[in-house]
Structure formats: C-alpha cells, structure tokens
Image (tube, rainbow, N blue to C red):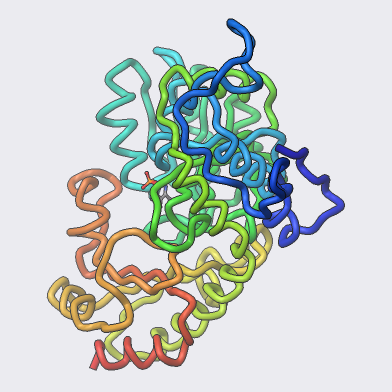
Length: 382
Ligand SMILES: *Cc1c(COP(=O)(O)O)cnc(C)c1O
C-alpha cells in the first residue's frame, strides 16, 4: 500500500487518499477486500509481504494508514472492536502499574479495568479531571497511564487535553485519549500532547451503523512496536470486510461531521427552549461548563446531546415515542438514535461512581434535516 501523504494534504483529501492508491494490478480505485486468512509464499519462510492474516492484511493496512494520518500519528493499528483496542492497549501495562481514569469514561472502559484487567494486578483511581488538585492528588509513582475521554459519555463533559497531558508528563505516565465522540475531524489529541488515541471505529469513523471496530494511533516508536506485537499475539483483529466498510465510511467523515455538528447545535437550542427539558448537556451551548475548553481544543462541538427530564418514566416515554430517532444503543451513524443511558448503555455502571441518573436521555444526532429531527422530538415531548 502507498505511503501516507504528508501534512501538505488537507484532512478531507487524506481521508480519501492516505493508504488508498489505486490497486496495482487492475487499477481498482477502491482498496480490495482481501478476504484471505493466508498468503502463498514463493519460497519457504519468505512470504511476499504477509504470511498469515492475523498478522497483516492489505485492507486492514489501508485503514490503519488512513486513520493514523487523520490523527496526525505515524502509526495506526486496527482491532475487532473499540474494546479489543482498549484491551490490547491495557496489556502494555504490567502488574503493579496504576491507571488514572476520568470520572465519566465509557462504561465498558470502567468495566474492563474493574472486572478484567484490574484483577491481574492493575490498580486504578477515578477522578474529576477538571479538578487539577484532585487530579494531581491521585497520581502516584506507579501511575503508568492516564486515560482521558472527551467529550464524555453521556454527560458530554469536556476535559482539557493539554492540562491532562501536563499532569501525565509530570507523572512520567503515558496519556491516552478516547477520541470516539470528537473524531480526528474535530479534535486531534496527539497534537495536544497525548501519547495515544483510541477509537471505537463502530461510531463516527464507520459512520453507518454497519460494523464494529476499534483503532489506536500513536507517534511513540516503542509503543507502536509493542502494540504491533500484541495485535498479532492477542489476535483481536478486524476482518477485511469490516475494514473495507470502515474505509468506505471514513471517506465522508468530514462531510458527515459537519452535518452532525450543525444538526446537534440546532437540536440542543430547541431542547434548551422546551419547558419539559430541565437541563441540556451540549458543549456548543455558550453557558455549558465545557464550552470554553471545547472552543479551544475542538473545531466544532460534535453530534451528541444529552438532556434531563423530570423522571425516569418521562425519559422512557419520550425515547419510545420518537419516530425518526431510533431507540437504540450506539451512536455516530448517519441515522439519529435516542436512548436512556441508565437502563441501557450505562446499565453496567449502576452502583459504581459512574452511575447516571435514570431521567437522562442521550441522543446521537444523525445527518437528517434538523427541522425534521426537531419536529420529531417536539411531538415526542408533547
Ligand atoms: C462504543 C465506545 C467504546 C467501545 O467500542 P466498541 O466498538 O463498542 O467495542 C469505547 N469508547 C467510547 C467512547 C465508545 O462510545
């Protein structure tokens, strides 16, 4: 596959061209789906390039190249899901290491640390990363990783990436940013001091709710070596078909994000003005607590909006009454989705420090016309 075009090309161009030259033999303009588990070798132990598809696949490599390029990273690695990417990353830690986690991280990340990785001897603390005193207070000599997610899920809290990077550097820890909600179109953590970016490719990067995938990007040579080793040794790799779907999705990431952001801003303003809505969480609102930092570190404010109603019954009823917003978990697809995090996406964090109020509703604003989406919410809230 071709080299990553340099910084000279803009984001929109790299999304279509990085790692995606026309195929050598027939000139196909799309990267073929190399649906194979193994590769014929001309001579014993001398493969042309790949020997076995867990270790490498050209469709996957194209996706890795474009995602690295979009994040401003030299290295990209793809996985079978966001959680597979996170698991592989956490396997870079050793027993005795300590992790600092934001207090509103993805529930699956918390579950992975508390129920899977933690018992192998990795300790962690949860902290409000917008409180630098508390943040510095939980850092220890053993802190090896600082895990930031911004904007967060489901409260859309915004964490100052540069400040977190400073605290991680003081501790000699590597800083990870889960960039799933913002995407590299809106926010590039590696440029703000993060060492590692992780993604659920399932969401905006894939963008069409038709695949599950994950990715990591970094500029750290040693870490990239270790991750490449683990990608093959652990084997949580994506199949070529899903890589192809993600490649197809990523080509329109810039266009889609523009539409998601525009729609979410309009929907958030509508919700702010609705008498049944008690509070709206959206960093694009001028009085949102995260607005100032978001305006500094993001190009726009994203497509996710959360809002609070008077009761769980109201939240459930509204989520069941929308017609265009499908009642479903996940986010980041072209179609709008609505859900009640308490009993749905965040059921696994009930009783934990990450528990969310049952009267909260989360929406993923798709790329339909905002007027239609607002009319749908209006009838559901009537
Ligand atoms: C969905 C999600 C994940 C997990 O990704 P999967 O692809 O579902 O495994 C991690 N982080 C965030 C912020 C997510 O939204």
